[in-house]
Image 1 (cartoon, rainbow, N blue to C red):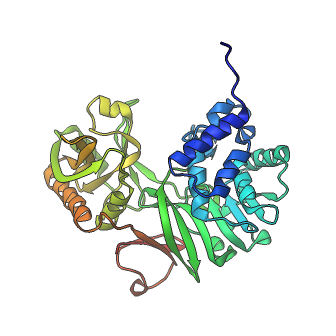
Image 2 (spheres, helix red, strand yellow):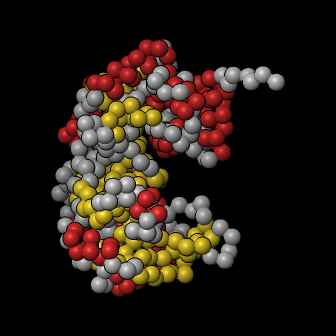
Image 3 (cartoon, rainbow, N blue to C red):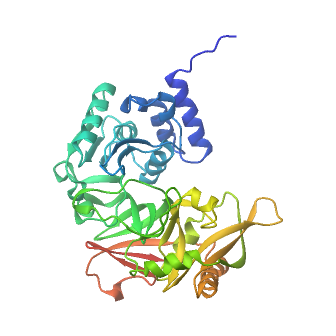
Length: 404
């Protein structure tokens, strides 16, 4: 029997079916958009089949240090953000962070009476987007080269603004160019943790209407605000580091010594399913605990016994002076259930691990069914006008995380 070549439409249909199965694409208009756009044309240097894999992001540019600075996001992430944006026919949409296919998805959903503006600070990215728009023939897409921090006021105001780069702050231009009641979808970094948040504009503040865990390349230009790293283990291929985002300056040497000390354990009695996301627990932990950076560790660090878990994004880690503890899980005697615990290092490792456990239990006892509420207020808003909870001060805004 001869092998039958898979057509591009079959690749799209398979991708769409998978997006539906994982719950990323629900709106029929979003489903139709993903079925229609030939996304592989944006990255002709990549095998077409790879571009339709729902979890595969295509890196299109790296900097001189090999750091990814531009990409075409994975289809699942793109669909998730488009669903969050709740785009309607005839709307005007601003995309900050160009790649081509995403703007085409917006254009499909807004229809011929809508208008999509896609902008990027990188001329290479906008040139790629312009080429894609030309090849695919979309007439309702405008490509702009400029710093996303400033938006594109000449084409606004906007019903929707969708940001496809990680941002640590919300510049005033985004709120000002968004219609009141409009939606801003942005991968917002809050104390190392990034969530793509759907905000609704209410006057001069933004109020969350859902969020999802995600990962994006960081914003460049005037709004650039990258995390710092405190390296705890620097053996090649097995690096371990804390991702710092407004956290207190750590005693790195003391923590390096702590990591070399024997580990201790504490267990919570709280269990989770194997496929259950920790995104809500982690937001609770960062709300409740003052010094909770993320510990990023390469797989080799776990394989060599340096740490008990490995994650390139990072694991919530409570730091207290010369000691620290990070979240982990272990199998239970129930199928696909895991108990949450903490691994501690340093002179006070046991105490710090038990403190982390207390907040895991508090989340389980009082907030497991709750979802965090995220709001963004202008910088300078008095404390008494903010909801109770964690306040994250940025140059332009005060971001709050509160719980019912």
